[in-house]
Image (cartoon, rainbow, N blue to C red; front, side, top):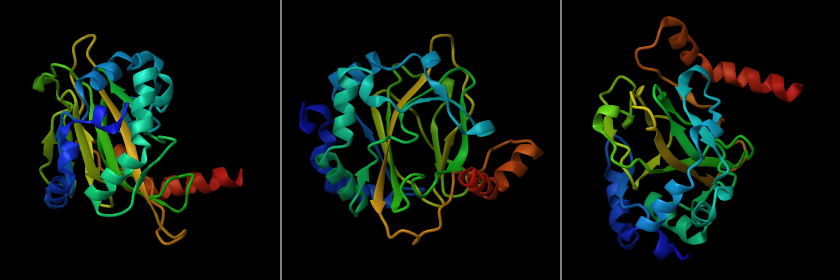
Amino acid sequence: MSLENMLGSWTGRVDELAAEFSSAQPFPLVVLDGFVTDDVAEGLLAEFPPIDDMARSNDYMFADKRVSETLASNGPMSRRFHDLMLSDAFADILSRLAGRPLFVDPSFHGGGFHQGGDGSYLDTHVDFNIHPHHEDWRRVLNVLLYLNQDWDPGFGGSLLVRRDPAHEPRSVPPLYNRGVVMLTGDDTYHGYRRMTLPPGVTRKSVAAYAYELVPTGSLRARTTSWAPEDAGILKRTLARNWTSLAATRDRVLRRG
Protein backbone atom coordinates (compact mmCIF):
# COMPACT_ATOMS: atom_id res chain seq x y z
CA MET A 1 0.00 0.00 0.00
CA SER A 2 1.57 3.29 -1.12
CA LEU A 3 1.94 6.49 0.85
CA GLU A 4 -0.79 8.10 -1.26
CA ASN A 5 -3.18 5.27 -0.36
CA MET A 6 -2.48 5.49 3.37
CA LEU A 7 -2.18 9.17 4.27
CA GLY A 8 -4.89 11.81 3.92
CA SER A 9 -5.12 14.55 1.33
CA TRP A 10 -2.99 16.88 3.50
CA THR A 11 0.12 15.39 1.88
CA GLY A 12 -0.66 17.46 -1.21
CA ARG A 13 -0.03 20.73 0.64
CA VAL A 14 3.07 20.03 2.71
CA ASP A 15 4.74 23.34 1.82
CA GLU A 16 1.66 25.26 2.98
CA LEU A 17 1.59 23.21 6.18
CA ALA A 18 5.29 23.88 6.77
CA ALA A 19 4.50 27.60 7.00
CA GLU A 20 1.60 26.83 9.36
CA PHE A 21 3.88 24.61 11.44
CA SER A 22 6.61 27.21 11.83
CA SER A 23 4.19 30.01 12.81
CA ALA A 24 1.98 27.97 15.15
CA GLN A 25 1.47 28.89 18.77
CA PRO A 26 2.62 28.24 21.41
CA PHE A 27 5.39 26.44 19.47
CA PRO A 28 5.73 24.82 16.04
CA LEU A 29 3.06 22.18 15.44
CA VAL A 30 0.34 21.26 13.00
CA VAL A 31 -2.99 19.50 13.60
CA LEU A 32 -4.05 17.24 10.72
CA ASP A 33 -7.60 15.88 10.68
CA GLY A 34 -7.89 12.91 8.37
CA PHE A 35 -4.25 12.04 9.02
CA VAL A 36 -4.68 8.61 7.40
CA THR A 37 -7.28 7.24 5.03
CA ASP A 38 -10.46 5.77 6.52
CA ASP A 39 -9.46 2.15 5.90
CA VAL A 40 -6.08 2.68 7.61
CA ALA A 41 -7.70 4.28 10.67
CA GLU A 42 -10.27 1.49 10.87
CA GLY A 43 -7.59 -1.19 10.49
CA LEU A 44 -5.35 0.29 13.17
CA LEU A 45 -8.26 0.61 15.58
CA ALA A 46 -9.29 -3.00 14.95
CA GLU A 47 -5.74 -4.16 15.68
CA PHE A 48 -5.20 -1.93 18.72
CA PRO A 49 -4.03 -4.09 21.63
CA PRO A 50 -6.30 -4.53 24.67
CA ILE A 51 -5.25 -2.22 27.47
CA ASP A 52 -4.59 -5.11 29.86
CA ASP A 53 -2.07 -6.55 27.38
CA MET A 54 0.00 -3.37 27.40
CA ALA A 55 2.79 -2.53 29.84
CA ARG A 56 2.57 0.44 32.16
CA SER A 57 4.79 3.32 31.09
CA ASN A 58 8.03 3.87 32.99
CA ASP A 59 7.18 7.49 33.81
CA TYR A 60 6.90 6.64 37.52
CA MET A 61 4.50 8.90 39.46
CA PHE A 62 4.24 11.39 36.60
CA ALA A 63 1.93 9.37 34.36
CA ASP A 64 -0.65 6.61 34.29
CA LYS A 65 -0.83 5.13 30.80
CA ARG A 66 0.00 1.96 28.89
CA VAL A 67 2.54 1.57 26.08
CA SER A 68 3.35 -1.10 23.50
CA GLU A 69 6.26 -0.48 21.12
CA THR A 70 5.42 -3.59 19.04
CA LEU A 71 3.62 -1.69 16.29
CA ALA A 72 4.84 -3.99 13.54
CA SER A 73 3.48 -7.20 15.08
CA ASN A 74 -0.17 -6.42 15.83
CA GLY A 75 -1.60 -7.20 12.42
CA PRO A 76 -1.29 -6.42 8.72
CA MET A 77 -2.47 -2.80 8.94
CA SER A 78 -0.21 -2.08 11.90
CA ARG A 79 2.70 -3.50 9.92
CA ARG A 80 1.86 -1.33 6.91
CA PHE A 81 1.60 1.75 9.10
CA HIS A 82 4.92 0.88 10.77
CA ASP A 83 6.58 0.58 7.36
CA LEU A 84 5.01 3.84 6.22
CA MET A 85 6.39 5.72 9.24
CA LEU A 86 9.88 4.41 8.41
CA SER A 87 9.70 5.10 4.68
CA ASP A 88 11.88 7.62 2.88
CA ALA A 89 8.74 9.27 1.56
CA PHE A 90 7.39 9.96 5.05
CA ALA A 91 10.81 11.13 6.25
CA ASP A 92 10.78 13.59 3.35
CA ILE A 93 7.39 14.96 4.45
CA LEU A 94 8.57 15.44 8.04
CA SER A 95 11.81 17.02 6.83
CA ARG A 96 9.90 19.51 4.70
CA LEU A 97 7.60 20.37 7.61
CA ALA A 98 10.48 20.96 10.01
CA GLY A 99 12.89 22.44 7.50
CA ARG A 100 15.73 20.02 8.25
CA PRO A 101 16.63 16.39 7.39
CA LEU A 102 14.83 13.98 9.71
CA PHE A 103 14.18 10.25 10.10
CA VAL A 104 11.82 8.22 12.30
CA ASP A 105 13.30 6.02 15.02
CA PRO A 106 12.90 2.45 13.69
CA SER A 107 12.79 1.02 17.23
CA PHE A 108 9.83 3.27 18.16
CA HIS A 109 11.51 3.78 21.55
CA GLY A 110 8.78 5.13 23.84
CA GLY A 111 6.35 5.14 20.93
CA GLY A 112 4.02 2.68 19.25
CA PHE A 113 0.59 2.13 20.78
CA HIS A 114 -0.38 4.35 23.74
CA GLN A 115 -3.56 3.86 25.77
CA GLY A 116 -5.09 5.23 28.94
CA GLY A 117 -8.20 4.19 30.85
CA ASP A 118 -10.26 5.88 33.53
CA GLY A 119 -7.99 8.04 35.70
CA SER A 120 -5.17 8.07 33.15
CA TYR A 121 -3.01 11.20 32.95
CA LEU A 122 0.33 12.42 31.64
CA ASP A 123 1.86 15.25 33.65
CA THR A 124 3.16 18.33 31.88
CA HIS A 125 6.71 17.72 30.64
CA VAL A 126 9.33 18.23 27.96
CA ASP A 127 10.75 15.13 26.31
CA PHE A 128 14.30 13.80 26.49
CA ASN A 129 16.51 15.37 23.83
CA ILE A 130 19.05 12.65 22.90
CA HIS A 131 18.03 9.09 22.07
CA PRO A 132 19.14 6.83 24.95
CA HIS A 133 20.78 4.35 22.56
CA HIS A 134 22.21 6.76 19.97
CA GLU A 135 24.35 9.64 21.21
CA ASP A 136 24.17 11.40 17.84
CA TRP A 137 20.36 11.35 17.48
CA ARG A 138 18.55 14.52 18.56
CA ARG A 139 14.79 14.26 18.98
CA VAL A 140 12.98 16.88 16.90
CA LEU A 141 9.35 15.86 16.27
CA ASN A 142 6.57 13.91 17.93
CA VAL A 143 4.11 12.39 15.45
CA LEU A 144 0.80 11.43 17.09
CA LEU A 145 -2.28 9.76 15.62
CA TYR A 146 -5.43 9.63 17.77
CA LEU A 147 -7.95 6.81 17.32
CA ASN A 148 -10.83 7.79 19.62
CA GLN A 149 -14.24 7.44 17.99
CA ASP A 150 -17.11 9.62 19.27
CA TRP A 151 -14.86 11.28 21.85
CA ASP A 152 -16.91 13.25 24.41
CA PRO A 153 -15.26 16.55 25.47
CA GLY A 154 -16.40 15.76 29.00
CA PHE A 155 -13.93 12.86 29.10
CA GLY A 156 -10.98 15.28 29.12
CA GLY A 157 -7.78 13.87 27.67
CA SER A 158 -6.98 16.83 25.41
CA LEU A 159 -3.34 17.34 24.52
CA LEU A 160 -2.28 20.53 26.36
CA VAL A 161 0.67 22.42 24.90
CA ARG A 162 2.51 25.52 26.16
CA ARG A 163 5.91 27.19 26.24
CA ASP A 164 5.92 27.60 30.02
CA PRO A 165 4.20 25.48 32.70
CA ALA A 166 2.77 28.67 34.18
CA HIS A 167 1.05 29.66 30.90
CA GLU A 168 -2.51 28.80 29.93
CA PRO A 169 -2.21 25.86 27.51
CA ARG A 170 -3.56 25.40 24.02
CA SER A 171 -5.94 22.43 24.01
CA VAL A 172 -6.06 19.86 21.21
CA PRO A 173 -8.85 17.26 21.68
CA PRO A 174 -7.75 13.68 20.80
CA LEU A 175 -10.34 13.19 18.06
CA TYR A 176 -10.56 10.15 15.80
CA ASN A 177 -8.07 10.12 12.92
CA ARG A 178 -6.52 13.39 14.06
CA GLY A 179 -2.76 13.68 13.67
CA VAL A 180 -0.48 16.08 15.51
CA VAL A 181 3.07 16.78 14.39
CA MET A 182 4.81 18.88 17.02
CA LEU A 183 8.27 20.16 17.76
CA THR A 184 9.92 18.77 20.86
CA GLY A 185 12.57 20.86 22.59
CA ASP A 186 13.57 22.48 25.85
CA ASP A 187 10.37 24.52 26.15
CA THR A 188 7.71 22.45 24.36
CA TYR A 189 5.68 21.50 27.43
CA HIS A 190 2.81 19.08 26.87
CA GLY A 191 0.68 16.43 28.58
CA TYR A 192 -2.94 15.66 29.43
CA ARG A 193 -4.92 15.94 32.65
CA ARG A 194 -6.49 13.06 34.57
CA MET A 195 -9.47 11.71 32.64
CA THR A 196 -12.88 10.50 33.74
CA LEU A 197 -13.95 7.70 31.39
CA PRO A 198 -16.92 5.32 31.40
CA PRO A 199 -16.34 1.56 31.36
CA GLY A 200 -14.99 0.29 28.06
CA VAL A 201 -13.71 3.68 26.88
CA THR A 202 -9.98 4.39 26.60
CA ARG A 203 -7.80 7.11 25.09
CA LYS A 204 -5.90 5.56 22.16
CA SER A 205 -3.03 6.95 20.13
CA VAL A 206 -0.10 5.82 18.02
CA ALA A 207 3.20 7.67 18.42
CA ALA A 208 6.39 7.92 16.38
CA TYR A 209 9.39 10.17 16.99
CA ALA A 210 11.61 11.84 14.40
CA TYR A 211 15.30 12.62 14.92
CA GLU A 212 18.16 14.47 13.26
CA LEU A 213 21.83 13.53 13.28
CA VAL A 214 24.08 15.77 15.41
CA PRO A 215 27.79 15.49 16.31
CA THR A 216 28.29 13.21 19.30
CA GLY A 217 28.75 15.33 22.42
CA SER A 218 27.52 18.54 20.78
CA LEU A 219 24.45 18.62 23.01
CA ARG A 220 24.18 17.78 26.68
CA ALA A 221 21.78 14.87 27.04
CA ARG A 222 18.69 15.60 29.13
CA THR A 223 16.06 13.18 30.32
CA THR A 224 12.33 13.93 30.32
CA SER A 225 11.72 16.95 32.56
CA TRP A 226 8.46 17.15 34.52
CA ALA A 227 6.34 20.11 35.63
CA PRO A 228 3.18 18.54 37.13
CA GLU A 229 0.10 20.66 37.81
CA ASP A 230 -1.58 20.68 41.22
CA ALA A 231 1.03 18.36 42.72
CA GLY A 232 1.91 17.88 46.38
CA ILE A 233 5.20 19.05 47.81
CA LEU A 234 6.91 15.66 47.41
CA LYS A 235 5.97 15.32 43.75
CA ARG A 236 6.94 18.92 43.00
CA THR A 237 10.32 18.41 44.69
CA LEU A 238 10.98 15.22 42.73
CA ALA A 239 9.97 16.93 39.48
CA ARG A 240 12.36 19.86 40.09
CA ASN A 241 15.24 17.47 40.72
CA TRP A 242 14.29 14.72 38.26
CA THR A 243 16.95 15.49 35.66
CA SER A 244 19.81 15.23 38.17
CA LEU A 245 18.27 12.19 39.87
CA ALA A 246 17.88 10.41 36.52
CA ALA A 247 21.47 11.25 35.55
CA THR A 248 22.72 9.77 38.83
CA ARG A 249 20.62 6.66 38.30
CA ASP A 250 22.00 6.20 34.78
CA ARG A 251 25.60 6.56 35.97
CA VAL A 252 25.05 3.92 38.65
CA LEU A 253 23.44 1.54 36.15
CA ARG A 254 26.33 1.97 33.71
CA ARG A 255 28.86 1.16 36.43
CA GLY A 256 26.86 -1.91 37.42
